[in-house]
Length: 166
Image (cartoon, rainbow, N blue to C red; front, side, top):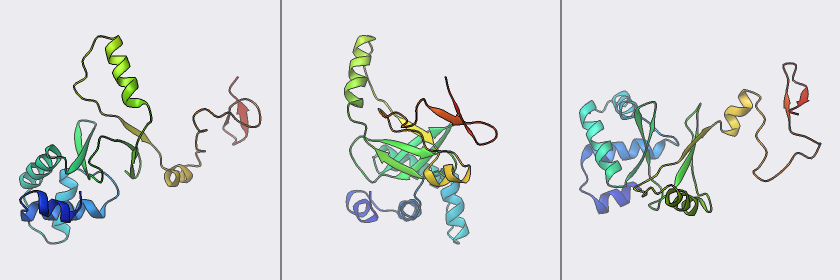
């Protein structure tokens, strides 16, 4: 949700506006503490409890996406109001919203087969973005449904040469 949308749909308080501005500048999820630290580095006085309270409220109102990693909530500006999922770089935190065709139907089918009733679901994929993978010389995986052109799937051995996974 943009700053303009926030201003037209919710009561705008100074902390909300500041939090929205910080998250609009980031291309990743951030903790409430990180947001507070960024604001303090800029010379803005904001209490940690105020930041936590505001990000929780903004997330509950659909203004922010929230994911939980290692028991900690991370927040990001919600650029899309419909239900969506994320792929998050485990190293730099870069986040992309993704849609997976057929996922919602698969979840409905699976929960019905197991006699569960779906209340909600979240799917966050944690991986390395191409830039971070390149830093570690990790080759990107094959696309779903494709096969290697040169025979069986191979992976680099300790010397960097390719070996078969047979």
